[in-house]
Image 1 (cartoon, rainbow, N blue to C red):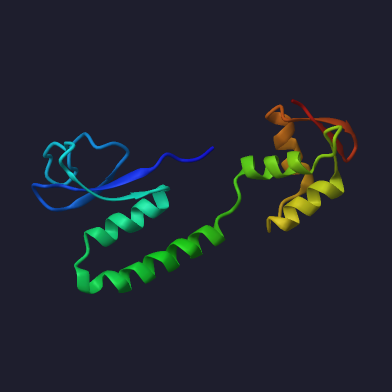
Image 2 (cartoon, rainbow, N blue to C red; image 1 turned 30 degrees about the vertical axis):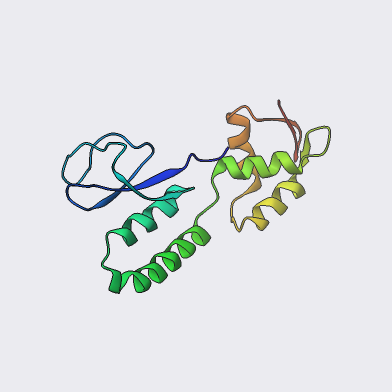
Length: 146
């Protein structure tokens, strides 16, 4: 599912930029209404990009290049170090399951290793069972439920 676009808007009253989904509401800095006449500085596809663009728009021109390089580097580092969510792990397991929807202990171990997670297979699959995603068919084998 794609994330809706974000707008970087500059308040005509205080000159500060902020992020919004739509060109309406109020400026979070001064409280003035945002109207169709409010300057649209940029449209961005994600909230991570919005964070960077609003910070850059509110920074003096002389400092923008340095700030941009630092923000981009920080954003890359944080996304690399994020632990995959349980939902993503389960989706990867579902993708790996063969046409019958079956998974083995080795399948789960390979996904966990690939994701860089040091977790016991039993703990992961027990969570999947508790959430009603899989059914244990034998020791070390599970079937995805639809």
